[in-house]
Length: 333
Image (cartoon, rainbow, N blue to C red; front, side, top):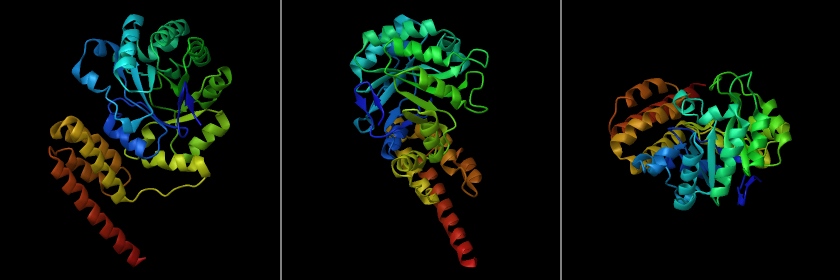
């Protein structure tokens, strides 16, 4: 099993820390669908220190989500360490993760996120200072490099290990690639062979079979799943089961997808209030509807709604109609 510091997970499946997605509403669903570890979306170190209300709310952890990793980002040692100390003493997270993979310009311009990938010495200094300041295990999420000419994944992972980091998650793309192209699993394998701390592989894990292959061929200690779980927490459940016993569980029915979509919305409403939650849920609803016949038309309708009841009525009317069509088709066949 995957073990990070003194924290032991029940399996090797990890939910990636996706910005704008991994709030408690989604993380709890991921945990209920079997993820051994869930990671919260990144929070700015300076926002934590300035006591920004929204940022502090992002540090909330439901006990049912544990074990959980809270991710912070920043470009200056002093503020990063102080933010880590705040997370260490004022949250019930199990792990503190440092982001050095975010490719977004507004983050890299602050010498944060993927900007770290260009300087193994900075990585060592920043991680070592953080590890010294906190009691919780410290991990790092990184990409393989800045661009194809600056791939320092092995050097960077070794710096994390030397600094006392408890694990490293490696996304097999460069910063320049963003989310395009293919993840280079061979470089993740080089990292795994270079360090003794746990390595979690990330990138292009789109099926339970991909996860199995990454573990068997690359040798990673854990598999991090991100975009493949959007609107599809069954990907987490199916991966856990496949890794346990080789059994490939069935995909969800359309109604099962909508039922979980509504659970997701109701939890968002409890967190954010109805107005904000319904707007935020628009992107999630599109993900839940992906692949369902006529889902695009329903997505366009939901993008106009402001109330929970409108969303629920539209989704369940649509599913009832879809089930009727499917039943008629099976009779004809």
